[in-house]
Length: 105
Image (cartoon, rainbow, N blue to C red; front, side):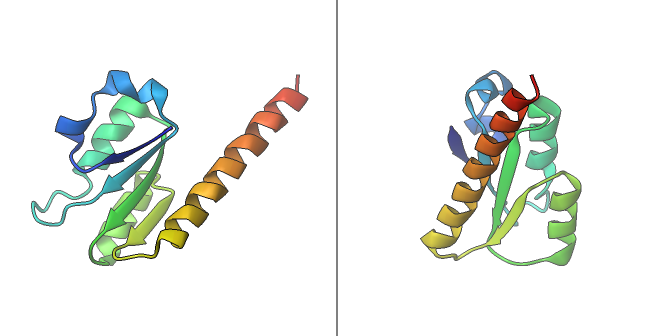
């Protein structure tokens, strides 16, 4: 399951996170606290995969996002096939990990 999140505080509560494998987070540059939502997600959801989208490229923001284990950092606008490629890759990775875990038993 995937969810697009624009505002962590109003869009998602931590009890919903068990139903999702991925959060697509739209980083907001207007308020100046762009990685705050990532930190909130990590406190609530730990290892959930996060793809962050931003409307501008700032090295410092990307660095902060990566420090919070954001797996992809996309710059808007982007082509749909780019997002689809990322989602396919993540899906294939999850399947491989599940198969590996089954093989280890």
